[in-house]
Each structure stands twice: as structure tokens, then as C-alpha cells.
Length: 419
Image 1 (cartoon, helix red, strand yellow):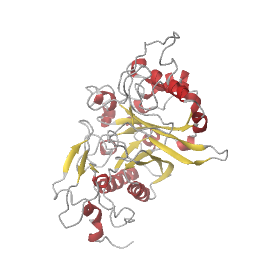
Image 2 (cartoon, helix red, strand yellow):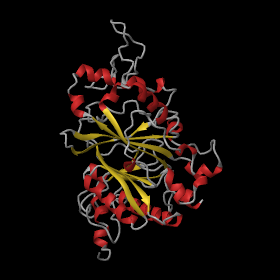
Image 3 (spheres, one colour):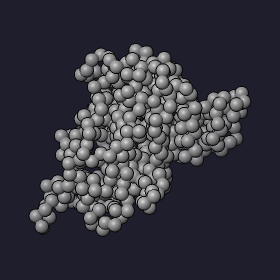
Image 4 (cartoon, rainbow, N blue to C red):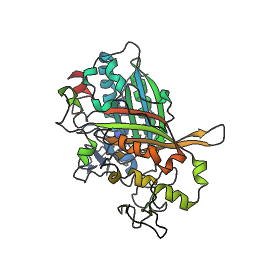
């Protein structure tokens, strides 16, 4: 590759209208999100600013890593790496330094450095986020077993699981999201090259969501079943949001686990949707399976999308209006001792199988302070009688400890690796 070209180095930043000098507008993404979005409003060198979708920048530094409370992005890549044979803590430190530096640069709308591929030169940052986590096996590989949190213990087995072990777990986990597919791929390609000889890709999954601005007003996303998905998500405005989603700064557990303070745990599941079977069902059946109206996400008991489920309402036939096995009923926090998690998924479509059915569904990603109080109790109840189980298959699974956001001049995971 040629040496770094100063004109190329600033080309992506220039497209933002030079955010800092132009007096960019800062928009907070939730009080606890730890990420700021900046929208360029004018150029200082005669260039036109990027369109609003392209100009949005998410801060790399903050209390929490970006990509957790950040609004859903249009394009995503989720992948795991295993450290190479013989690689250990030293190599992991160097890798996390490289990855953090690249993520910081790319999220700011800059190039990746002298070896930049040029894939995203014409774009702004496009809400790019890069999020890093550590799997259960990472701690054994790096000699940090004593610092592995109990909350990272392997998830229990569920009777409906049909998991491919080659597409789950892994030493290191990376989540990439952006509102432009080329920007997202550029980040993916950069991190893959940064891994060098230190780590190898174990698995990769690609996803998408609706593009911001595609609807007349912001709304909850739909999944490939056509259902509004994520209505009951905890909200940063709620008093107990941080308690549910982020690990407390001081709490139970040995001091060796304190590096996870302000971090979160990500559960990742590849859930294939049997779309042909689903589409054969009449609308009334689909709504009974979910427990909500398909058109607007309102509970079958009435109201709007945000109306509370009336789980005690019965119809004229003496049966619950929201069936006892409806997905919305079984997964409701009120039915699970208040268990809650922040769902932040991507849809996926990986082609048509040999039997003519689409390999498509949901890359389910949820965030919580403790999986044993978030994902696990809810999934156990769903596993025992969710009407939706007939139309989905859980095909891959992973659990990752995602440390707090990096401070200035710090790389992700530094308190763990150097503490």
C-alpha cells in the first residue's frame, strides 16, 4: 500500500463539513447511553455537508460502549474471533489496541490509516458503531480465569435449541452497525485486517433494519414476520434502566470482577424464522400467536402500541383475550418477576435453501446487567410453551461480557487486560 496521503486522510471528515469547526449540533442518545451523535450543518471549505443520515457521528469514548443504547442502524455485522494458537494476553492487548484505534477513527468519519482500503471515502460516519466483548473462553486463553465474572457462565440448554456450535461463542465478539452498507463493510474489513495473525474469524452474521427516514415518523422496527418488534424495551428515561442493563459500579462479587462496572452482557442468538409456514397462517392466527395487532403493535386487549397488556381480560368465550401461550404474554416482565432486557436485533437473509425456503430470521441481540436475571428466566418460560416456537428455530448462541466504554487515550478492555 502507498504511504498515507493527507488529502485522502481528511476526505471523509471533510464530507461532514468539518464537524468541530462548523459548529456541529450535539444530540444525546439517552441519558445513560454514553454516546453523542453529531450532525454537520455546514462546510467551511466550500464543500457541501453530507446528508443527515451520512453526517451522524457516534462517540467512541463514553461511560458505555456505543452500539448498546444507540438507535437501531440500517446495516449490521456480528462476528466472533478466536485467538490464534499460541496467542495469549500479550497478543490480546496489542489486538485490542489496534481495534480500538481503528474503531475510534472510523466512528469519527476518518480513514483507517495508511492501509485504508478506500471503500468508504465518499461517506460520512453514518452512525457507525463498533462494540467489543469477551467470551467465556477468552479468559482461559489469556490467563485471566480469576477475573472471569460468574455472569459469563455458559447459558443453560433449552429444549427447543438446535444450535450449531461452530456458529456460537468465541473468544472475542464484535458488533458493527451503520446506516450505510459500505461504511459498515469498511469497518468489518478493517477489523478483519487488524486481527492479522493474532486472531481468526470463528463465525460471522450479517443483518439489516429499516433505514432511518424510511417512515414518515420514527417508529418501532418490524421483523421479518411483519410484526412490530421491541415495543416493551426498557427505556433510558426509566428510573431503573441502568440497574437493568448495566453492571453496577459497586456490587456483589469479588474485586477481580470490578472491571465490568458500567459494562453489560450481550446474548446473541441466530433465530431462523419459518416464513413460509408463518405466511400461510391467517392474520387472526398470527395475532393470537403474538398477542398483538399486526398493523400497529397494539395489544389484543386494545389501545395503542404502548398500551399496557391487560393479561386479566377475558373474551365472551371465557378465554383470555391474549392467549395463555401468546409470545407477548409469556415474555412480559410482569410474568417473569420483572426480568427485562434491552433488545437490539438485526434481521437477516442468507439466501434460499435447497428446499426452496428462505434462510432468514432474526439476529437477536439483547443487553442486560445479568443474563441470569434477564435473558435466561424469560427464555426458560418461552421454551416451555411459547406459541411462536412453532415458527422459529434457535440455531446459534453466544454470551459475551462487554466492558464499559473506553476513556480518552484508553483502549476497550484495558482495565481487564492491564488491571
